[in-house]
Image (cartoon, rainbow, N blue to C red; front, side, top):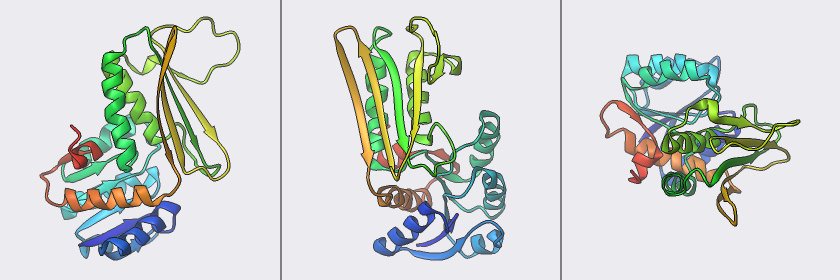
Length: 241
C-alpha cells in the first residue's frame, strides 16, 4: 500500500514513517508545508496527516478533487472550522480521530458506557497531560472524551469548565471539568474521573511511545481505502461501535 505522510517533519510524521517500514507499507511521499501536495497525492493510495490545523482545509480540498482517502490526526480546529471540514471530509472515505491508540479507543468506549450508567450524582472531570511542546489545549483525545460525556448526559458545551480559579462556588451537577497540564516529554496521559459521595471511578490511559498512535493511524489507512465516502473514527476501524 502506498502512503503519503503530510507533516512528515513533525514528531508524529516521523513516527508514522518508522511504523510504515515496520508494517511493510510504502511511503511514496513525505511532505510538509511548502511542498507540492497535489503531486504527492497523485502517486499515493491514501494520505496520513499529522501536520497543522491550518493546513487541513487545503489538504481535504485536494483529496476530494483526487478522490483520495484521508486519515486525519490533526487537532486544534475551532468548532466553526470543524463543521465545515467535516462536511468536506464526508465527500471521501476519511478517518478523523483525536487519538489512534487502540487502548485509548477502548477508554472512549468505556467512558461512554460509564457516562450512561453513572448519573449526575457522579461528577465528571477529565485530566490530560502532554509534553511542553504541544500547542493546543485541550488535546484532541480529551476533547473527544468530553464530547462523549456531554452526549451521554445530554449537555452542551456550556457545561464545560476549563480549570477553576477564584471563588467559583459549589460545583454544579451539570458541570464537566477539563484540566490540561503541560510539561517535560510526556507523550500523553488521560484520566476520566467520575466522583460521587463515597466512591470514585477512574479510567486512565498513559502513552509512553508515539509508535502506538502511528501504528493505529496506518491501520486506519489500510481500513479506510475499502470504505465508502464518509467520516469515520477509530471506533469504526476497531469495530467498537
